[in-house]
Image (cartoon, rainbow over all chains, first blue to last red; front, side, top):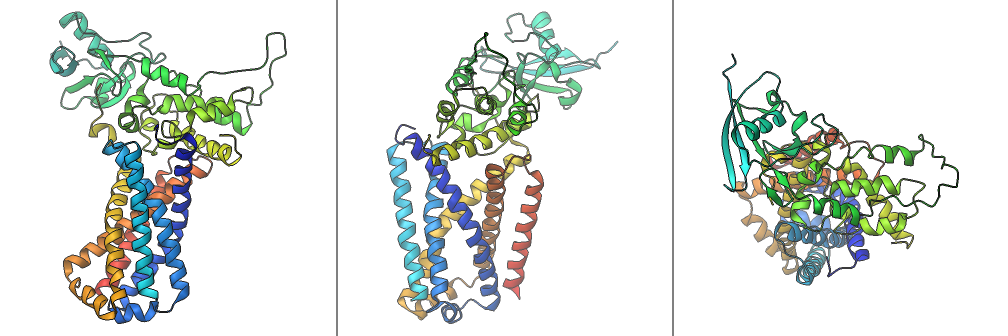
Length: 115
Length: 238
Length: 117
């Protein structure tokens, strides 16, 4: 992989595992929340009633979004390199773009639901 | 008189595909026996490799029914389905002819992973005293029986997907050496096995471990290399 | 050179890899949609409600259940990998494959119950 230095390659592996650990915790909590929410009824008033102004909720989901924005693009990059044979700078750039997109859309969603 | 026939499909370079041969089936018969019979009695120009024929050298490694194994240690009775069998060369290596592959890339990657021991003592000094009970030595011992047969390399999908991936055997050998307290090239070796061409591309598919005829676990060694390279990177050595 | 076919891949650890990768891909495709859906809240409660009403269809509910199962599977497979990569080696943890599958099944059932209750 000439487009990335050895240290960068190793770091990407490391950050994917670190974000995975954070996500494991977040997902446990999130699954609990989903099951509760679905059980209590999925209407906008019910959901927003629970989330509006809830800063703990906002903080938790902000961490969740950032962890996703790290974890997902690195994973997709691997799939692109191995199954699509898409390597080099363009693949890495696309990966960055996905990361930026997920961050923006995710934080927007958290903002919309909390504030 | 045993008239049972075994239908064997053998991959041949000339046909660029499988050619069928009917050979006599015997009660105690290995796949190597079958291939040898075909070459001696039916198809003199069939190319294949073997040496010891008793499961020590690894030369006879081939794909039998899609799985890499030592043909001298594979009984026909264990793998034949409805008296049929398929024999093909190892995957992920260029085919020279028929069942013979070019192992150069396999050994070249071994070398690139710094799979050679590099000591500091000379013949004039005393032997190094290495405790067989140390955790490091146990880790090394778990992997040193590798004879370089290529079964793991053939079985690995990451080798297929990433042409520069060093592969399970080379990484396993590197693992045994980074755990060798006498070796002087630890940091260089960790640099050689880190990154996308090295241990960080292993997805723990573990087909290597599943198929290794010596029951080694390159998956374990590669996981260990991930931990070691991470530690080295965090300490600024990588 | 020749490549392997499905016959080299018929063992549990490989299936675990495949489930992990495919579930990850599915979730990666779903995530932007999920963020977009929730973003409706910015336009107000009515907007989000409109979206939720539109998706109150059995097919959607089945899809949601499927995604919960995929998320659970991906997480359990991922935890298994974290154990293999970061803790001292103790085999392929094939028993973990069983625990992980069991945990995901439980999650899927819990969600299903919550849905139909």
